[in-house]
Length: 337
Image 1 (spheres, helix red, strand yellow):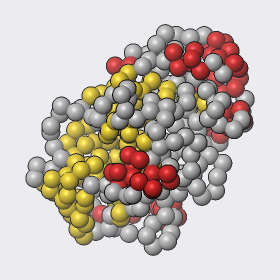
Image 2 (cartoon, rainbow, N blue to C red; image 1 turned 180 degrees about the horizontal axis):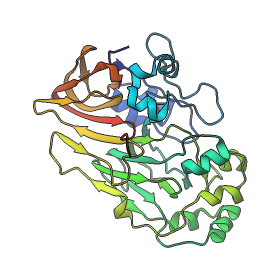
Image 3 (cartoon, rainbow, N blue to C red; image 1 turned 60 degrees about the vertical axis):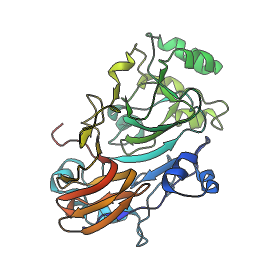
């Protein structure tokens, strides 16, 4: 496989509302928005504890995970395979928060290895591509250091006001990006539409579970809150160290992510002027606006338009995008990081 592939929407069921912004981007009817608030793009990851939900199916009927496993060097490149075997090391989502998400956090690589038998934890980043409503905001990290025992009391009592009130609260707009290291407590507010990059797992430890999840076991993933809270970063965080504001930047290529993200994933906003050459790489593309062409060294040409999502194999070789396009290009970790 050398040619880039356009992908249909892939919206596994979730516990929260949303999806209208995904439908609008993709040009689907309003009724399609009920399918879910998350579109898992080029996914080789399943929902936690499930066999297939979340996996991307290619137009030829195969799961992308099966295709990559069958020929990892062609899909990912020899250097990537040497570092990560047949894992893409990346999950990309479109996430449309139709309601505020609960306060939660994710485990680090070391915690995930110990408790979930996984090479990857779940560091993530949000690229805000749209907002709606009167007060779109995000909540990254605690404003002040909080004793772990206090957090435990909040969880026991399900004191949502205390949990949310302890977090930084930051208004966002399109062009802002938010880096969420493993362990950082966080939430996304209603009306925030993001392209999310994350490590390829579905490990979410949910502090504010009542009225969101069915029971506590789903909140702590069966390891108990005492153990789960060992992975929580309870220190004060300055939100400006986690947020990068790129809306005013007009270069053809803009690195979207805050410092520290490249060992986990990379993301650039592309605006060809009029054409832009790109190195060979496994990549996931999300076309936010416009029309144009993707030309590849070994995989032919493909016409692009707003709402398209694509997976590009490493074997496509050198690529070029041209036309009046705005694209988010998502890639796995920078090798050597």
